[in-house]
Length: 177
Image 1 (cartoon, rainbow, N blue to C red):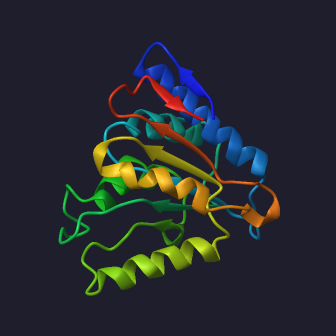
Image 2: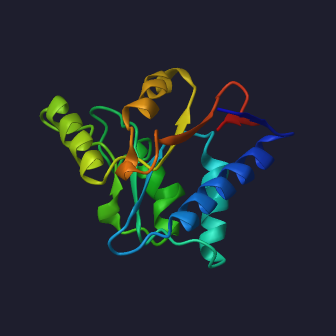
């Protein structure tokens, strides 16, 4: 792992967005080969999402053959509530790019059986072949993500571990790659 330190949040967001963009492009996704991206919510990745939207609108990046999995959702909050992570992701990212809504996976915090919802979510990740790139966070509600990267090992037999990087909340002008 390496630590990337930049002068400010905007530069860190741009670097992260370029990294994500390059990983997707280098993967060469297509109809039978989807790039799978793990995404966080919150204010820290917002600048990165804005840059990714810009790359998409400029014609530099497509999400047509990308699948995403968001790491969390509030329990009991309706998905259309303005504070839900579902609303956050659709309003701040997904509706601005060409991702198929069926490929944007967000947990259902209103599922009758939350354990079954989590198990089904994990199954969808496995069916997608694992996560190619996981964008994590280091703030208190995301501490559980520290164990996610090593769990998704041997992606399609081509990588020894999932690639991930983290935006630590305490100082969002740096991240780990």
